[in-house]
Amino acid sequence: MAEDVKSLNFIEHIIEEDLREGFDKKALRFRFPPEPNGYLHIGHASSICLNFGLGLDYEAPVNLRFDDTNPEKEEKEFVEAIKRDVEWLGFEWENECYASDYFQQLYDWAVALIKQNKAYVDSQDSAAIAQQKGTPTKAGTDSPYRNRSVEENLDLFERMKNGEFKAGEHVLRAKIDMAHQNMLMRDPIMYRILHKAHHRTGNDWCIYPMYDWTHGESDYIEQVSHSFCTLEFAMHRELYDWFLDQVYTEGKVRPKQREFARRNLSHTVVSKRKLLRLVEEGVVESWDDPRMPTISGLRRRGYTPESIRNFADTVGIAKRENLVDVSLLEFCAREHLNKIAPRVMAVLDPLKIVITNYPEGQEEWLDAENNPEEEELTYRKVPFSRELYIEREDFKEEANRKFFRLKPGKEVRLKNAYIIQADKVIKDEAGNILEVHCTYDPLSRSGSGTPESMRKVKGTLHWVSVAHAETATIRLYDRLFSVAEPEENKEKDFMEFINPDSLQTATAYLEPSLKEAQPGDRFQFQRLGYFCVDKSSSENELIFNKTVGLRDSWAKIENKG
RNA sequence: UGGCCUAUGGUGUAAUUGGUAACACAGCUGAUUUUGGUUCAGUCGUUCAAGGUUCGAGUCCUUGUAGGCCAACCA
Image 1 (spheres, protein in one colour):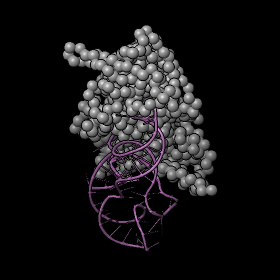
Image 2 (cartoon, rainbow, N blue to C red):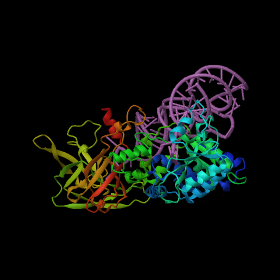
Image 3 (cartoon, chains in turn brown, orange):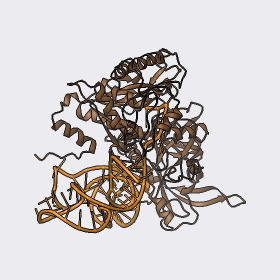
Image 4 (cartoon, rainbow, N blue to C red):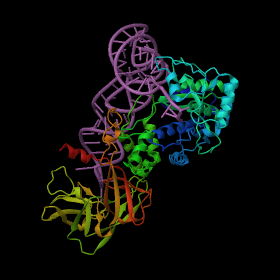
C-alpha cells in the first residue's frame, strides 16, 4: 500500500529529524506563549494552530503560557480574552501556565548566577547603559560596575528585591561579553526594578525579569521540547541558549527555539500598537469590531473556528516574508459557511413589485429549502402575497441580453415561488421607479411538478412578502484599508489608508422565519452573502453583520461592460 | 562598515532530502444549476542572477543581487 507521503513544513521537518536522532516522542511538548497585553489576532491564530496542531499530530501536550513579566502593560482582562479565543478556536491546553509562577525559581537562579560571577548589578541609568552598548559594527564598553564583588552584587540584588531602591536605580545584568558580535549578548539586562502591582503576584515583587531571561527558562521549567517564535527573535536564540546553559541539568529536556515568519494579511494591520490606535481613535468601535483582524472581531463578523483553522493550514508556515491575500481568508469562510449556513431570503435594497393578477388579501405559505448542501433536505415555510420586495438592482427597464433578471416583458422565477413577468413601471415625477407591476403564472409554483413550473427560466430572484417582512439593521463591511499593505509606505502613516466606506448600514426586509434568530446565528442570505446575528441584536432590533459576500461572477461580467 | 535570516507562478506553500516542479487561492473557458452561489471539467503561469560540482541541481558549493531583522530597564 502506497502511503501518502504527507508534505511537511520546515518545523515538522525539524521535529522529524529530532525524532530520527533519538528524541523520545513522548517527551515532545509545545507551548503557546502570548503576552496578556492585548487581544489575539489572525497572526496569533497561525501560531496557535501551529503549536496546538503539532500537539494533536504528535499527541503531545501543549501549554498555554502567559508571558506576564511586565506588570505595566498586562491585565487580567486580556488573559480571559485570550483563553476564550483559544478555546473558541477549538484547542485544549494541557496546563495554564504563567511566567509569573516562576518568579521565585528565576530569582534563585539569578542569585546562583551572581555567585558564579556571571551576573552583576549595574547602577547606571538606561541612557548610560545604551551608550556603552556600542553599535552593530562597534564593540561596546564595560560598565564601571561590571567588576563588583560577588558579595556586593548579592547584597544589592537582595535589596533590589526588598524594595530598597527606586525604579531605574539598579538593574541586574548577565556578564557575557560587551564586544560580542550579537548585541543581545552584550551583558543583557535580566532584572529591572518596577514598583508596580502585578495581576497575579500583586506586590510580592518589585523586580521583574526580562523576556530573554524568562522565556527560555520557562520553557525549561515546563520541559517544552520545541519553542517556536517569530523571526525577529532569531538573534535572541544565542542568548536563549546561553541562559539555558546556565541552568541545564543533564538528562532533562533541553528546549529548542526555532523561528518562523509571521503571517501578514493584506488590507489590514496586525500589530497590537496599531490595532490599539484603531480602537482609541475611534476608527473602529472596539477590539471585537467585525472589521478588526482580531480573533474576537472575526468571531463577531461570523467567521467559524473551522474556517480560521483551515485558513492557517492552507497558508502554511515558512521563513520568508509574505503577504497573504484576504481573499484566501474569505474563501475559507465561504467554503465552510456554504456547508453549514441555512439559506434564507432577505432584501437589502427594496423595490416593491405588485403581482396584479394575484388576489388581494390572499397569502400562501410556500416550501423553501433550508440548505441544498445538506444530505437530507429540510424545508421551512415562507409567505407569498400580492406585494413583494425584490432587490432594486434585480430590475432594469433597459437591459442587454446578459442581464437575466427582471426586465419588461421578460420572465424570471421567484425563488421557491412563481414565475413572473414585468408589465409596467410606476415612476414618480422625477423619474424614480416606485414600483413595478407584474403578473404571475399561477401554474408555475415551485415544486408543484406542473409543466409550467418546470419551464427553463434563466433568472431566479430572491424576494420577501411586504406584509410579512421583518426588518433588521444590516451592517455591511468592507476592507478596513483600501491598499494591500497599509504599513508599506514608510513616509505615510498607515491611518491615511483607511477605507472610509468600511462600514455601511442598511435596513433590510427579511422573511419572517428570521424573527427567532439569536446572536451568533449564521445564515446565507440567498444571492447576497453570509450574515451573522450580532451580539447586540435584541428582540426589538435585529442586527446582522455581513461576514462575506457570495462569489459574484455577475459583478465581473458587469464590470467588463 | 558588521552579524543573522530569506529568495519557487499574481499570492501562500510543497517537492519522498540530488531524480519528471506540484497543491490551494486568484484569473480565464466551458458544463450543470429554481442562488450569476455550489459542484464539475479545462486553461494560464514558477525555481533571483552568474559560475561550479554531478549522468542529473529548486535542492550542494562559490560569488553577486534583492529584501527582512539586529543597538527598549518591551515581548
